[in-house]
Image 1 (cartoon, helix red, strand yellow):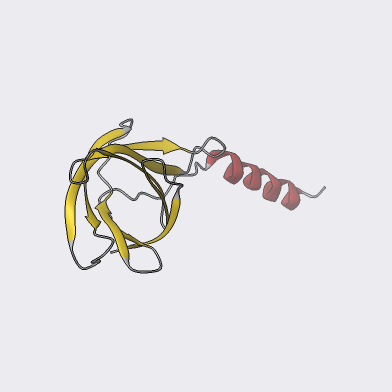
Image 2 (image 1 turned 90 degrees about the vertical axis):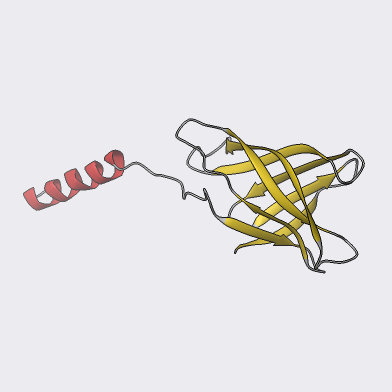
Length: 132
């Protein structure tokens, strides 16, 4: 092996093993998520500090029969890392809706474009999301 090839190989290993992969930060970004009919939920991802995994969340839910009208709800959002890749985070909310007679409400947000939503014993519903 020539001297130039050894130097190239050395720099390659330095780049590969010394660079740290960081996940994209979605803190303080607004998202709207919708189904085939129209918007379902609007929320802002809270600002999570370094090791913080839990934050209070306020979000807007749209009525099923009138997607132009909405009401406000709150819950706790948890920032969780993927079990196979700790550079990727998703967010989970598990709360009870106050405006809908104590309905258990769960959603998991996989940034930047997918949200899985579940009310009570219904199946999860997949919503498309975008940054607003």
